[in-house]
Each structure stands twice: as structure tokens, then as C-alpha cells.
Length: 311
Length: 312
Image 1 (tube, rainbow over the protein chains, first blue to last red):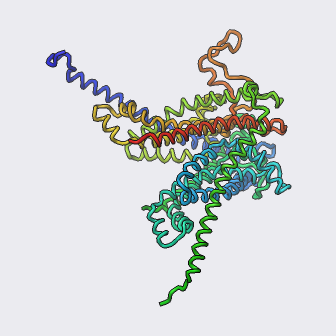
Image 2 (image 1 turned 30 degrees about the horizontal axis):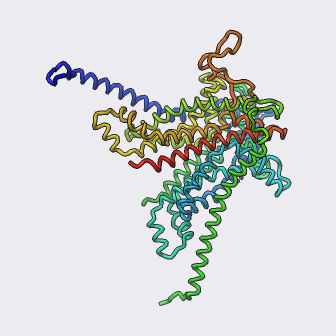
Image 3 (image 1 turned 60 degrees about the vertical axis):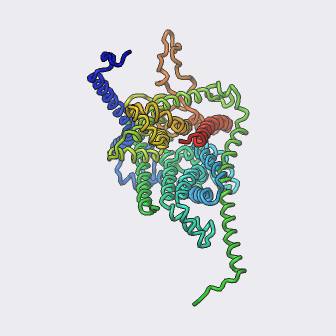
């Protein structure tokens, strides 16, 4: 091929046409990619739409005042009562037990890994915690029902076979890895100079950790606690297996009780016709659940902004 | 001028006290870490001991049964496998595309901001809510019914944030010179993504996908919520096999079949009063744990390899 044979070279207009085509296909690809990113927004819209529209149907049959103040939850009986506080009490008690275990344990592990542990130990400990966090919740439910409950019954012989206590304890263990891992990240992000300043004043490692590192990382710690609360409130299978599923308005963790989530499971296991009042209750319960987690997320964002430290 | 009068003796005592507190705290930290490790060992150990007598080939090849000794997990593991296939086929393209868009294309404006805040918030939504979403949308509005397709899509939405976040992190680790080099020789933005960014980010994406699928395979609540059955004594129709006289199943008929999955089978067995089923629950729980832990193990190993090998 000779260089001055003009017909072998693409003409200018050909090149422009190719450019234009490339441009068009680039635009189409960009739009497809954007559509994929928009699916997550559609998911949120879908969740809100489904929960709100079914709940509106529900609240046409049941007054909101009854929903919030009634002390019985018997939606499938002839004498139907719809007091959501019954389910909320189970959720609050089990979450409180879980957090009482998870927050101290998770925080201590995080401080230990970030301030005391040698890098080698940290390299091993973090994956182990990750494995613990990856265990399916149904397996944790089995663990709570068939191992933790019998163990607790040896200490408290009057403990029933289903209880919020054993479910909550196991839920706490399940949540520890989330708190430990997020809090550790937050504490490791605290600049070394702060610690060195503290050591230079003669402070011990523990004193430095508690009085310098933890306050400096507080916004990150708060975020991890808020995530832990969301996990506890939304946890389902451990409670469905180990806490019993009878609605029970109680603040006593040694009793069995249903939670918002285990009620949804119980209804879904039965065969409820689409559009019946029983079908609508699980969406009203789901809406309550989402509103509770939303409140905590807003609180978390406020805490983060209030305590954010910039270095 | 007042001086605090500490003798050398007192200072030494003070230091010793501080050191003792440090040591005690370290012991507490190790103790709490140990609890986590012990729980894993206790769980696996208990399930192996209790379920050992069921862990044979028959257990994998038998359907669920009313008699505990004959019951197996055939329909459960086949169901889990098929649901995971649907989940992977839906979540991987969507998640990778969304991650590529947010890192390589998106302009810093309010639309992008909404998408990003939204992904963060979706990760904190309780999984059972995804079940309610898909009960309302997939089961009734789209008419997919209580099928493998519905379950797979539900779990795909659930793990989408995990896939997107890991894709973005993997892409962010690729230095700008790779993009500049590609574009300098005339590649378009998509060609840069297709031939450079996505291949180089692949190990990171794969790690995220495996962690996501490990989470999905253990999820119970959303699958129960869409109304999956707990007692299934048949397999979904394999493509091109005879389902009834003279009628062959189509290539995708299995998508619409009723199903059960491993976690639901375990839940069913733990909630029966007869203790003979506890043995089955233990054996099935062990099988599920092996699946989940080995998937997580592969992901952790992959990440470790990656961190060691890649030096830009």
C-alpha cells in the first residue's frame, strides 16, 4: 500500500460519521448505566409505596388511636384488637438485651484491636469477626433455642423454653462484629499525634484510649451504635425461633413475646388471602418498623454532625 | 510556690497501677474476642455432633418427609442453588453497572447525591422489609407468584448495595494514569471502562459478589415473607424434561416453580415439637454453615491475595 494512494485512507466525512456513531453509542451506554444506578432509588420508592398504600387500606378499617393505644394484638381473632404497642414492647426488650451485650463487648474489642493489639493479631481477629457476622441468622436462632436457652435454664430454672432473654443475648453476639469493625475503623482514623501528645504527658495506653481516642472518634462510634440498633430492631429469625411468637405486652426479658418482625413471619407462614385485614396488618407492622429505624438513623446523622471532629 | 510532694515510691506505685489497668483491659479485650471464637466453635461443634448421624449421601438425595429419619434436604439445596443463580444474574450486572456509573460517569450534582444517600440507607433497611416489598410488587403487582424468580430478585435487591459499594471501592483503587493512558490513545470512556477499569477491578468486585451471595444464601425472613412453602417434595422442572404426558418443560419453566431453600428447611425443622427433627436441623444447619463460611473464606482469601499482589 502506498501512502499517497488517497482512496486507501478514510475520508474526512467517513471519520466524522464514525465519530458520531461512537458518540451515540457512548450516550446509550451512559443511559443504561444510569438506569442501573437508579434501580436503588426505585427500590426505596417501591418500599415506601408498598408500605404506605397497604397501610392506608389498613387504617381505613382501624383507627390510628386504637393502633397506638390498644393493649391487645389479636388481629386474626373474631374479637380483633390492633394494639401495635404489644409488638413494639417485644422489639424494644429484645433489642435492649442485645445492645446491653453488644455495645460493651464491641467497644472493648474495638479499643483493644485499635490501641493494644499487635498488627499480626489484628490481621487474624478481623476476619474471624467477619466470619461471626456472616453466620446466617437462622443458625443463630437454632443456637439460641437449643444451646443458650438450656444453659440459661440451668442458672434460672423457671425460664420458659422461649424467651426474649436468650434470643436477645444471641442477637447481641451477632451484632458485636458490626460495632467492633466500624468502631475500630473510626478509632484508627484518629491521628497518631493526638496519642503521642497524651503519652508525652505521661498518660497510660488505657487512659489515652478512653480520654483521647474515644472522644475524638465519637462520631464514628455513634454511627456504629446506630447501625447496631437498626440490626437489632430489624432482626427476625433469631426471635421467630427462640422468643416464641405469642403477642405479649411485657417489659420482662424472661418472658416469651412476639416482636414486629416475628409477627410478620408468623402471618407469612400461614395462608392469608391478598387484601384481607390480616394481610394488611403485616404492612402496617412493616411501616412501624421502618419508621423506628428511620428515627434512629436521623438521630445518628444528628449525632455525627454534632460530634464530628476534623483533623 | 506549692509543689505536689510525691515520693519516688508513690510515683512507682502510680505507674504500676496504670500498667495493671492496661493489662487488665487487654485481658478483657482478649476474653471478649475469645467469646466470639468460642461461639463459632460451639455452634459448628454442636451441629456436627448432633447432626453427624444424618450427614450421609441419603440426606442430600432425599426430599423432606414427615418421618425425621427419612427426611433430607434435596429440594432445599437445589432450591438454594437455583435462587442464588437468579440472584447472581440480576445483582451482578446491575450492581457493577451502577458502581461504574457512580465512579466513572456521574457528575457531582443532586441526582448523584440522592443515589448515594439512598444506597447507604438501603444497606440499613431490615431484610424483612425487602420481603414485604417483593410481596407487594413481584408477587402480586407483577404476578410472578411465590416462585424462584421472585425469591432471586428479592435477594438481588437485598445484596445490591453490597455489590455497588465493593465495585466502587475496587474502581477507586485504580490510579488515574490508567484512565489517562487509555484515553490518550483515543479510547472512549466506555472503552476505557470495558477494557481497563472493569477488568482491573474484577477481583474486588468478585469479593463483594461472594460476600453478598453468602449473605443471601442464609437469608430467611424475606423468603418466608413472600410466602415460600416449607414442605416441598419435588424439584423444579429441568429444561426439556417431560413434566406431564407429552408435555416438555421449557428452558425457563423452573423460574416459575414453587421452591424451598436451606434456611427455610432449617426453620421448619427447628419449629417442630418432635426432638427427632432437631437432628435434621443440626445436620442441615451444618451444611448451610459450611456453604456460608467457605464462601466468606474465599472472599477473605481473595482480598488478602489482592492486597499483597497489586502494587500500582
